[in-house]
Length: 381
Image 1: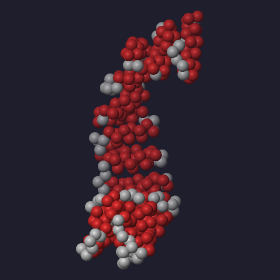
Image 2 (image 1 turned 90 degrees about the horizontal axis):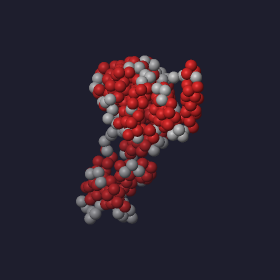
Image 3 (image 1 turned 180 degrees about the vertical axis):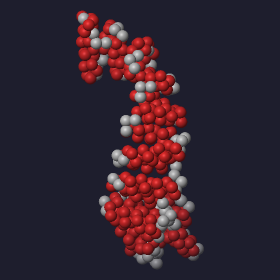
Image 4 (image 1 turned 60 degrees about the horizontal axis):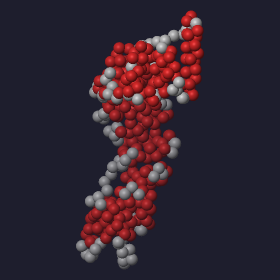
């Protein structure tokens, strides 16, 4: 979560420092303020180190405040807060400084410290919906569920047009298992904002991850209609159908996704294989550009449909592609030779196996080969 608020303190201090510099030969604090304003944070830090803090009437409030802002910009949040507290001890009364402290504490994962800093900021901590949302998130991280939800409700009441808070509460409801309420918040957000496919996918993914498959499917079906060009949305819906064992529907969606984005071609062919769409699976497989992946998947398709002669006929191509280094492929080839009764060729492949799990399968095949050779009636091809 990020806070967006004006650098009120920094601007005021910059003006003050710039005016002061007119009367000084070199005002390092003023110069640091201007460097920080222009985004030169490292140079600003170096310039502050050159300031003579032994001067009479040295402005420590300004010095420590500028230091805190510079360290904040450098993402040195702990050090920055130390400087801000020194500024407060030196007399800094601008409440905005506590907003910086709160923001830094949040980035340091100090959620209780964030809430305490927001409390010290006073009314300005409730002047923007983002700050209320930050408070709610801190309560949630601290497992203070009622306080978090109450703060969200306050945000909605005070800022009815701030719809991002519905997205935040959606995640809370999902974590609580209140899926219908979560879906209602998602619908409010989606109806009032201009969500892209990525936003839809985040809602759908959260519901799916939490096991709310049906709710996720409802939203995914809507998203697929709204973003017909999004292959990711199509694939998400396909996975949700898979979760419900709707294999053919998932295969059709993967096929559609592969047309929208070629990177899903392999998955499409695999799903068509699982759906037992032999011709379509092979057709989709031919579109793969990676030769090894193409042959590996094609072997799986051939085996699925008992096309053992095709596996055998691809032996040379498999060997040229280097796939026989994969012992799963070597065993598949041996099995195809066994199923076509070419026992010698089968044994030639089996003897190359070294993996214990495949060695056990090879032993079983050898037993069957022996049965076939001794008694054709007992052969289990």
